Amino acid sequence: MSAQAILQRLGAPLTVLVLLTLWELAARALALDGFPTATESLAQLPAILFDGQSLQSIGASLARMFAGIGLALLVAVPAGLAMGRNPTLARMLNPLLSAAYPVPKAALMPMVMLWFGVGDLSKILVIFLGVSLPLLYHSYHGAARLDDKLLWSAAAMGMRAPARLLRITLPGALPEVLLGCRVGLAMALIVMISSEMIARQSGAGDLLFNALDMALYPDVYAMIVILAALGFALDWAFEHLRLRLVHWAEPRQDAASGGNS
Image (cartoon, rainbow, N blue to C red; front, side, top):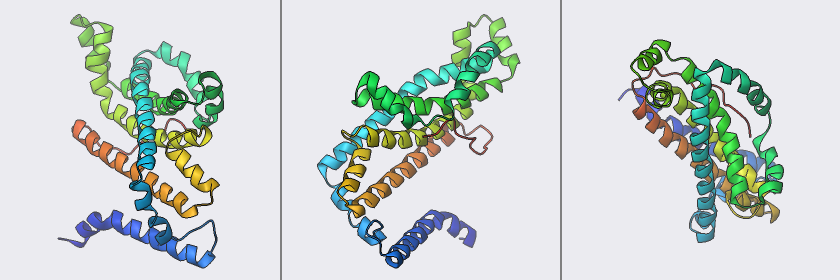
């Protein structure tokens, strides 16, 4: 096996090892109460991961996150595809999207709480809003790049507009739509934690803030490590799924995300 192949296989573990080493050295050098060492923080992982209540809270967070993503897929993808094939609709909605783009989605949480309370629905709606923009953006551009002749041919054969959207536009725009899903997955995790820090009833964000309130700083950093690992695992799994679904598409780098936290 060549040296380059070895580096490709060991690149991620080596990067993690280097980061943990730097963290350990920096924490020991600074000796701050609010900055525990890597060994102190990692030692708390079993206590969190094998605690039933903590796992239940993390599971509740994931349930909210996937509910928000599912709702965004049902609403934002068809809307983005329709915008990509209908310039009039795109001109109508683009100003609204441009205004919503720079607004941190977690900042909407107090307003949503006033309308729907502090339960799961508020958090799911905020996650939905955070995921919808990248899905709209990528679905719109994926549909706009389609060859018009494909749709003209389908229309000439008698295929109705909803069927063309489902059978022609969606498959053609799928590589771009899945890139939007990958961006949206990261956005969902960020907004999920942010919303749970604001409406603190249960969830991973609530665990994180409770540990901070009680000055359990190793637990705080251990939760951050868990969330980072969770984000990495979800992204890795989705990217492998995406490559299988659109292996025929020309690979390219991710575009800019469609919103912020």
